[in-house]
Amino acid sequence: MDSAASSPGTAPQRLARWLLGQLNWLVPNGDQPVRSDTVARVAAHLSLVLPQAAPGTRVLPPEVLWAVAQTPASDAALDAWLGGQAPQPAAASRRW
Image (cartoon, rainbow, N blue to C red; front, side):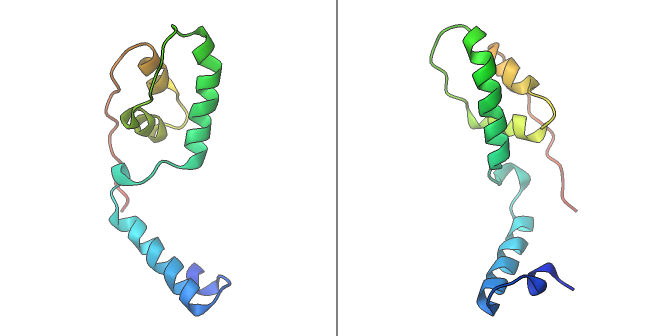
């Protein structure tokens, strides 16, 4: 049985959840928003390493955040960015 059909809610709510779930397959991975747990992990890592970094104002570019989101077990892209290196493009995974 489909999870949208077995979930609680009115018929229009279930239909909306099902349609939004299908749209997830239509949006490429690179265009999907970064998950909130990834943003929290990046913020926590920055709070630990910024006190030791060179003084200055920094704005985290979306490319670096996306690269960090692609490798959740490693903060190497973030550390490289703090070190002044350009972010390395991550290979986009396909969802088939």
